[in-house]
Image 1 (cartoon, rainbow, N blue to C red):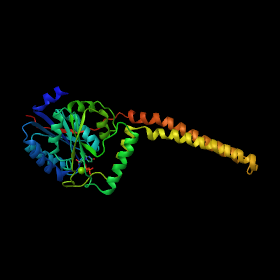
Image 2 (tube, protein in one colour):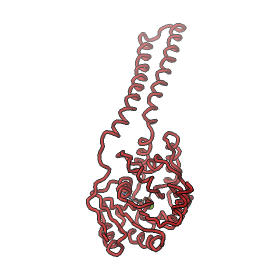
Image 3 (cartoon, helix red, strand yellow):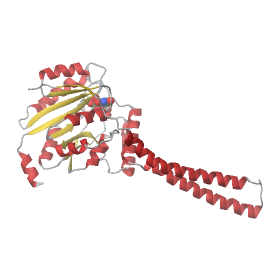
Image 4 (tube, rainbow, N blue to C red):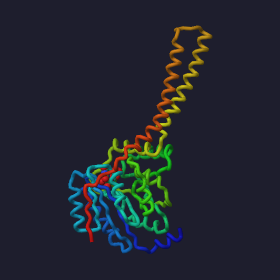
Length: 322
Ligand code: UDP
Ligand code: MG
């Protein structure tokens, strides 16, 4: 580690920012301006900004082209349609070939200044530097509550745990990026994948600002499905729980059988056949749930893994060759 830290300390570093954009015509210009100002003039940094146009329907792509004409450090990957932020991030990370890669939102909610702090940690020898937000003022009450509920649930049933209040904004060393690229799944819950690969991790903290312009692309329904994606990608507990529910139902039905038996012995038969019928129905019901739980365990894993579709398709890559 000392060796790694030593070699990194004064070296010039190549840095790729990976910026997924979906209908962000209002923000791309502001983002590029800010990044050029904060990171672009740093002697130590060889900057590249990889924009992934995630099927925007406004003139985001045209604006990016105009920005690229003025700044050759911009690389624009135009996806064939809207694949979602996770897929867009994957496309950008796949295309990056620099020493360190930083996924970052275009709306300046993730402050570019923080990248300098992250780089300092990286130079100390850390391979991942997480950015943790210390406020959630920019989120609605509902989003705050549901986010905290999500992290609690997720970290109870899934492993490894994902750090609370850390988004996709983080610095990753090349070795981490290479590890990520070998993860073949098509359900890409990036926060989970980032945590899964591990590596030596440090944290920096920041205040999350409100969006600089434009509107959020995530509504409640999208976030709910995103949470489900997280649960199902990193835990099979929701499947397995049915086995235990089945067991409980069976146990209860056995107790019920004993109860009815005693009742018949003490008070006599009231409705003939009712007791045996009830016991059989409820016992078999429990047994069937157990069976479905066990099959579901295997089916769930196989289903997700078997589709093998590519995560995204690229229409065109725009690059200024020198
Ligand atoms: N984004 C994307 N594809 C989508 C939705 C969002 O590439 O389908 C990008 C968006 O352009 C932005 C980032 O993901 O750069 C974060 O989106 P947003 O700011 O809307 O999310 P929030 O900060 O509200 O969670
Ligand atoms: Mg945002």
